[in-house]
Length: 267
Image 1 (cartoon, rainbow, N blue to C red):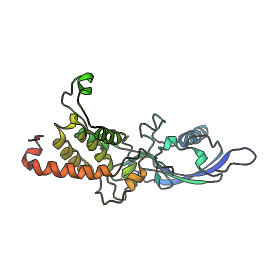
Image 2: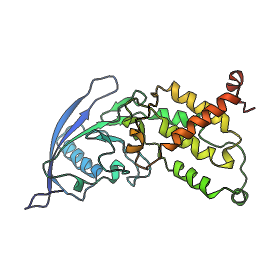
Image 3: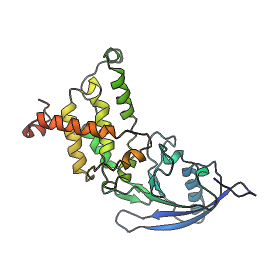
Image 4: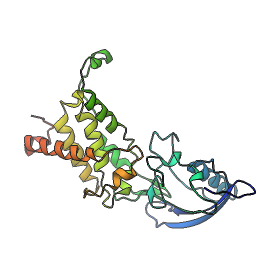
């Protein structure tokens, strides 16, 4: 990082994707921003830019955000070609301007994927993820009260791997980073989380078949083992989960007759 020797502040040039709606073409628009504190988060820097645009009577830049604590994954931006920016295992909201030098030129665009259509500016529709979860990313059987659940013995290794998979925040960085626009890391994390726990056992086969079918129907690409997904994941979800998803899917496909899959039978 370097700042102005006189003010301790930074000057940056932002190349930001502007697109009025999904039906209109977009383009990069340059913005000059002075007096940027290195202690600002990346989103705070965008807030300052929007305040100045509004003050001038211009349309502010639309971008997603919510918790700003690295938990929700809403801050889905591609910064200089990297989902969530240059820091590993860091969401956009946790990226700070001290990472950049005074005079830096930064390109900001939305996640690019067929299954994530642009809504406006930097906002994309990630509803495809919600539909994949609705297809089977849950446990609907009665697991009992909390004390009863605690009485179910789970090997520590399995519990640790399940919790590692459950760390996925569903931000979509894996899709944006994949040259094929695949969602295998996201789906594999959700499938692994429940497949590794006894509570997920009764719906195990139905879950993986339904979620993979929905993933394909939503237009996500196929995995060809580039592993860009794991490199871009802000929570460090392991690509080993993709191998588990493939095993779970093959197991379920072999034991579940095609005719019974639509009925939701696990027999």
